[in-house]
Structure formats: structure tokens, C-alpha cells
Length: 418
Image (cartoon, rainbow, N blue to C red; front, side, top):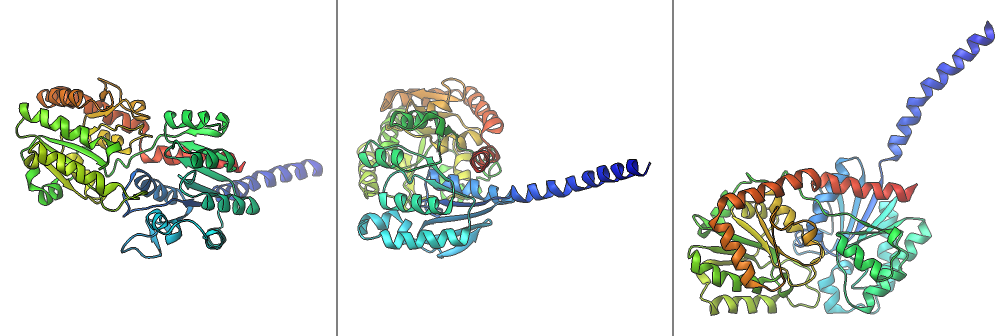
């Protein structure tokens, strides 16, 4: 009888111990995450927007997040942004590095990365587009992560047709590579990466910010010329690769059917301009607008991130006629979240998101005539435009919310840490 009571007491003790063990596991699940990228808002671009969206969600989920990034005018060297520890340095500023040159920086980069890792104490190191631009940065980081036993994850937001890209993509010991589209994944495998080490994760979008009923009042206040116009928005930063010249040539045709049409182009200032080509491209586009006498039908300006939702909401159609193999195109999700129809080119990862006749139209590269034709069709058929926009909105709600991409990223971390 006494032995029976002892067995019962032991069993009860084990049962009581289980919750304590679970609490310890939950605590361990809260990761310390270090991220690195060349830019962060107010620097504007797809990667920068992606980080500004995803990293605060990681913090909300209970993780500690540090980001090492480049300097930006008017920004402190160290501060917290939505719970994320931001560290800024010229040694991660590509615009500065391009002018200065990369020679003689190894010692400074080593010291910087060592101090950053010492403070962040990361369980995982996640870098973005460090398979290009600078071999010194990637080699130093690889060595330090190896010495400290920290898994090293790369997100490839782009691919390049150069030897440096091949060398850093294949020869740096990335523990895992995230590709932002199936197109990028295929290119990485084609460059020699092990397919089992590359996972496709499409971007997500903040549906609390980009939404059909986003406030338009600021857009109309800043740009009263938008009121009462049929607005076409080309939200990608202005550049030849983004197809801005194609958009302007198409507008010249569209105006013949819709004289009141208005196109918004994004001539952003705060970007990573490796090679300093931005202003040259913009000068060409301005000349093209003048040549076609479209000054009263075009707006070119720089927009902050908080202006963008209102501009989407004030638009009728979103276009992205990229003439290069676009890796993904985050603006597609922003437009879809705002319930607007999309027109994109059959370039890179964009057809993975936009299905022709389902949530928008997919056209050939550099075909300004075809672009004009589908826009004229959408402007003349509001019911069709509404149907395509609604389908895109439903897709975003089901698959592309910011919480989805964040959780999928965390799942990769946890698999590596096992």
C-alpha cells in the first residue's frame, strides 16, 4: 500500500513538472535575431520596405531584433524603430562606398561586425543582398559567424550577370538562402547553388496600411491635380529597367482616348544608387514627357513611405512595365491590397503573382502599344477593373499578409537552429 502511494506521488510530481518544462521551451523560442542590409527607411526601395514591414512583426512576436544598415541623412547612428534596434554606419552605405572605393576597409569592417555581434548576441544572422557589391563584407561576416557558431542566412532579392555575384553566391558558406520568387530560386540553382538549400518566400504587405479605404486626403492636398482625373500610378522608382519610358510612350497613346488621364511617376531621391545612374535616367524621362507635350498629364515627385498608401488609393490602375527581369516587385502586393488592377510585364517573378485576366494583365516587355491597349480597356470598363482588383485583394488576404512572410521566415530560422 505504501509503495502504491509512493508511485502515485511520483506520477503527480512528473505531471506538475511538465508545465515548467514547457515554459522553458517557450522562453527559448524567443530568438535574438541580427539582420544586415545596405539600406533602411528613409532610404526607399523594395528591400527597405520589406524590412520595415517584417522586422517589427518579429518584435511583436516576442523576438529581439537588431539591424545593421547604412547611414541616412537626418538619422541617428543608433535608435529603436518600432522595437527594432537600428545601428547605422557609413561602412554599410553603398552610395558612400561607391564613391570612396572598397580598398583598405577589411580591418574596419571586421571591428564593426565583431562589435555588432557582441552586442546583439544573435541566435541567427540574416543578411539581404550581400551576395553582391562587396566581397570584403561577405567574407568577413562569414568568418565571424563561423567562429561564433551563428547560422548565416541570405535573402537574395536579386541576381546579377557578373563574376562577383557567382563567387559570393556559391563560395560563401550560407547556411540557407531565401529567394524572393521562383524566378530567383531558379537563377540561384542555375548559378550552382544546392536546390535543397534554397527556399522561395514571396514578400508580404502590411494590409493595415495598404487598404482600399486608405486616406486620400493627403494625396489630394499635396497634389490637387489628381482630383477628378483617371489616375495611372507607376510606383516603382524611376529608372530605365523599371520601364518608365514605356509608360510615358503608352500615355501618349492613351491620351488620345482619355484626354483627362493622369500618370504618377516616382522620382525618389533617397535610394541606393550604386553606379549613380538615377539622375541620368530621370533627365531622359523628363525630356520624353516634354517631347510628347504631356506636362499636364504627368506628375514626377519624390514620395515618402507614408504618402504611398494614399497615392495608391487615389489611383485607378497600377502599372509596373519593367523591362528587366524583375526579381519580385513589392508594389504589386501594395496595389493588390488597395484593390486596384495591375498591369505588369512577363518579367522575372511578376507573373508568379499577377495572372493574366484574373487579377490584372501581363504584357510583353517594352510593348508600349500593348500597355496602352490594356489601360484603355480598363479605363473604359470600370466593372472589369473592379473585378480584377477584388480578386487581387482576396489573394493578398489569403497569402501575402505581412504575418505570413514573417512566420515563414521564422520557421526557416528554427529549422536551422535544430
